[in-house]
Image (cartoon, rainbow, N blue to C red; front, side, top):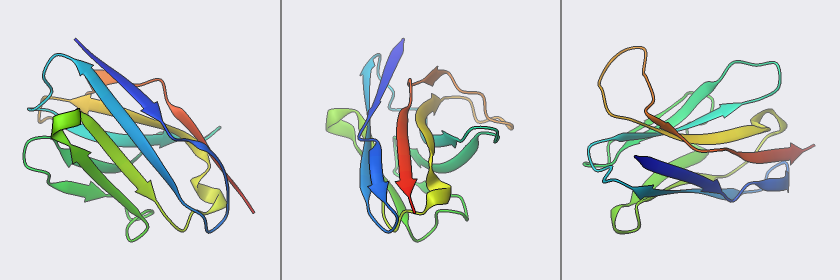
Length: 121
């Protein structure tokens, strides 16, 4: 099994930046896709960024393109989300998740516990 642990969330003023980390431990996850997903109260979960652990291919939701950057450090089994130009609308609990099967809709094999990001006006 794989354990995922997010960190780096906090309170930040609009326009500021945060960098989230997702550390993976346990079995090898080299064949997985790693996603960052956020959920705000009363809203559906939103996939905001994804990266292939093996080749580094990335995906971004339109809502965060140009502001967020996903990256990974394979040696550390860690995925990062650099969040710039933060807006109050970005306030949410941010999760990292891993999936193996290339199916639609995505089914996630592992989830972290989440880290809260709060952006003040």
